[in-house]
Image 1 (cartoon, helix red, strand yellow):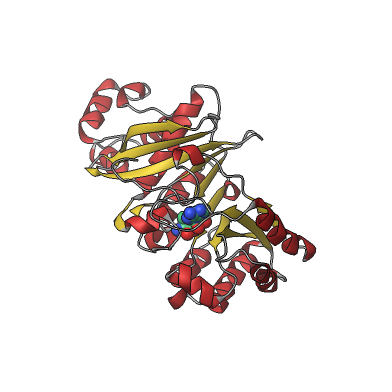
Image 2 (cartoon, protein in one colour; image 1 turned 60 degrees about the vertical axis):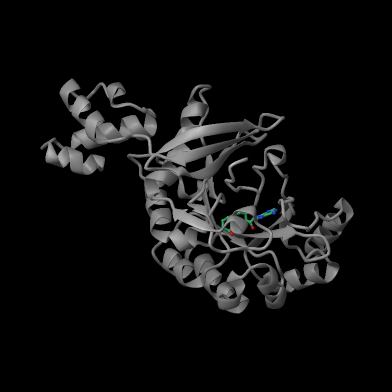
Length: 338
Ligand code: SAH
């Protein structure tokens, strides 16, 4: 049962709801007993009818450098279904949570571990937010906070649009987590129809596009989504976002040895992005089991980046975090042995 319905059914005044929001989203309580501003009888009744924890952590892995923490969760109402979320503690004091919006993913991108496991289920908004709350509670123990959220875990946010939008509403609500929209990044492989809806309905956060290929033909080879969502039409939709928000778009580009890492690919990428408000994130391919691809040599990564530099296209080479615990980009997959 939802807390809103519960309070209505018990004829409670409105301020009780705000008391709850404050305790749950800001003081990070996990138990109604901690909601001491409520009368004890109300707390007891709520505890009987509502579960505050929609996910159960079942395994935590910490990278050697301690900066990346990956948690495997099981869904409270479907315990055999597992998902992962990752906390990245950056050197500059940002604490970023990478959330999943699905278990598995239907997009089947050839290079992605989650894509390779297929689609299992959509998560709801509470389950997406719960991943953030979990890490917020951990960080609170050392007086730290979550500063950024990226929808770059398992799943495609545009295919679970309602839950994605609802979770962002909770994260940015002043009475709930009160995060600034500009601290939130939604990453998509480019599903045009829902992306357009998302933008037109007023998304104010940051947008990342998983591009990964600089031309339609190559993109179709490695990303099945590309066929029905061709690049020119995708860029028209992205232009809408730029017009509405005036924000720079991040383009994610995995560099895969001898697949999309050649000089000519960099030159094509320049032509695609030249007049756009764009930032390219070059991500050296992270090895995924059962895939025979390789990460390019350092030299090839720098040569690719140099072409972007000469064309004045902003870029970063993404530092891979958490590779030793398979928490890096594209490595999230919830097999039994993970
Ligand atoms: N479905 C969304 C959200 C997932 S984001 C999207 O596609 O954007 C996951 C990020 O990790 C994406 O940029 C994805 O392309 C990248 N990724 C996937 N597999 C990877 C791999 N093997 N190595 C490096 N990055 C990878």
